[in-house]
Image (spheres, rainbow, N blue to C red):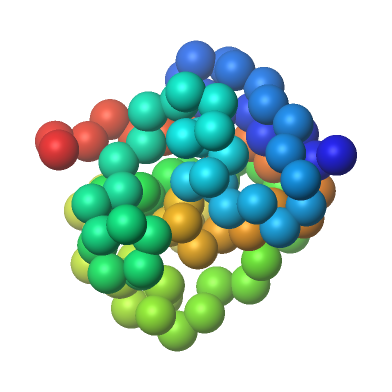
Length: 98
Ligand code: FES
């Protein structure tokens, strides 16, 4: 099963293939905001992909549009609710003002 490492805590969890980063966090008691409930309509589930970006589902248009509005967004940014895990990844949950 794919492994997801959440920074900054360093917690490593195993998830089923195709689980979203948000689901992986919530199922394992890792705090990740999700104000819109996972519909690519907010940016509170923003994460930074440190490694394994090729092991996440492709960015679709809805997600890309929202990522353009993320404060502190980078080329490594993903929405946790949209990025589906195919293999091992390392992500950072940024400090957010929410
Ligand atoms: S929870 Fe709103 S975009 Fe992911």
